[in-house]
Length: 137
Image (cartoon, rainbow, N blue to C red; front, side, top):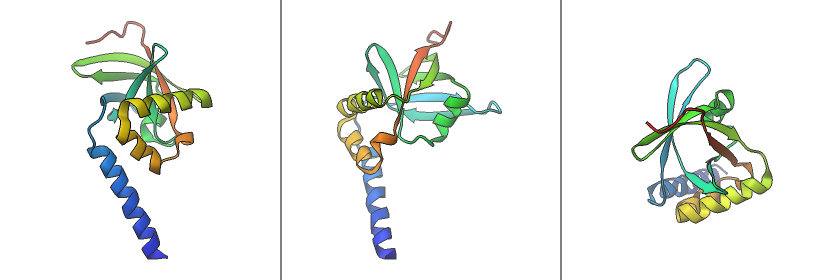
């Protein structure tokens, strides 16, 4: 039994590492703060859908998603531009499906590998809306 669990663990690790090594799509940096005001940077994928910008948390228990729920004011750096945003996790299953499909189109093999080991139904789309007065800097 231990050998089977070890083999599955190795397989999952290989898929995750493979997904990270395949260079497909845009990677941005999401800056969040926790309740004490400590700053955290997280590398994220993003897609534009229906003239809106979405991120996706691969787990409802991810640390960055917990910080977003606690303090929705975030910054996103794309290339050389950083802008302030207000984040809003979404729970609509149809929106999750559409964001997952958009991620699959944009990130190709990397997204397919990731979704092979993670539960797509547990992923959480996060809407980003421009913060008032939060232009790029």
